[in-house]
Image (cartoon, rainbow, N blue to C red; front, side, top):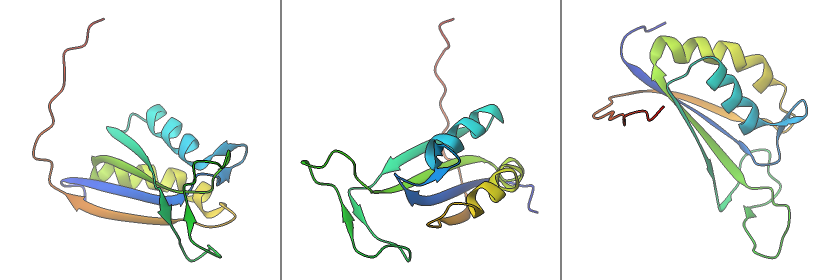
Length: 118
């Protein structure tokens, strides 16, 4: 395990994928917050496909429920990211349609924090 630097963990899934009764992206973001991960952002794609897709999924304004790609980006120091991944790994392995997880080293150039008004 590399304990130096920062890393970006990306999880590619679908907006309809679930872990138990929770949507994958909601489950991941709540677990990350509970474990004091530095930052998580969820992006919903407008079009995409993966190995588990039968066809290309895309956003259509007339559909109420859509199966769209979703990317969860998680940033923290490498040690925290490695620990977090080990924590969620079993949950991700249970996602019925599958998912893709990548990890890459990153250089943080700026991290500006505002003043908390509490």
